[in-house]
Length: 200
Length: 200
Image (cartoon, rainbow over the protein chains, first blue to last red):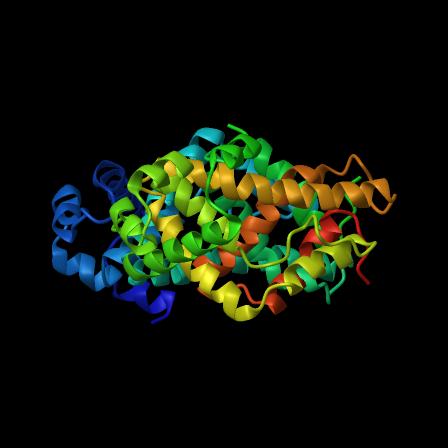
């Protein structure tokens, strides 16, 4: 089903949707993914379970969409600074460290929950990682169109591994929040040189 | 305690040690980290539990050292091809895909087990990640000494995030084994350009 078809069938306003996603994330922080029930979401948000299932299909999809809605950082499609470095920095600078830290804590818990919940991994891939990576790819495509970077750079296939991998290594191995400072340094030292942008 | 001090106190031969690590990994594949007991290791390896504890301190350390002993790929200190690209490729090509796939499956399980076992994360950091990264750093230092790359490259601080992050993103998000082909392409497209080595 396309986004448009979903929207047409829905009687939920964007404000109501945002409120609902906030409640889902609150519940997630309180009880964790495994203990989160659709009953609890329905009670907290004063919705019917039928509405929740009709709108989101299930818990995994609802949680993935709530995370996407709440993701720190600006939308990649909203920024256009004229350079790849400027665009990537603008996306990162749009969020604050507190937001990123909260998000990292939630992501850590969810990454662990994916172990026993393959449907959660699938929902994350479909509703969070793929749309986010598509946004980054569009930022990169603009840089190609400007002639800033070459169209056949082999690093294009590894944007996901560079960005998400760096984020994962920072939170899971360093056990440090991926602060703005960390992400900006990582973009300048790793991502831009790999994409062929001189940063000096 | 230093490696030397441990070795002096030990009456375990390197062959016996290798055999013991193999048994630990077999048990790990059979029952997983949480269900693995020192009793089972003692029984399987016909050791006394006292010996196991004296030698390794505990389950987390034993498992981390067994993983390090078994890690696919050559030791970074054994290769010296004369170029950074040659060295990194030699390390990766030393292992085969079957080994890497088995290792990735074990690592996936252990990454999940780290959630409830902070001592496992700590043991991994100390006995697996840090020694491995120190080896990579020595390979990179040789490239600096040869004048192949610049000593003040900001990517030096992110070798861990690039390498382990790429590996994690491949296994956890793509759910694909990090094949030789993947790792070699990733090194050429991401790691070497970030470190300032032209790959064309």
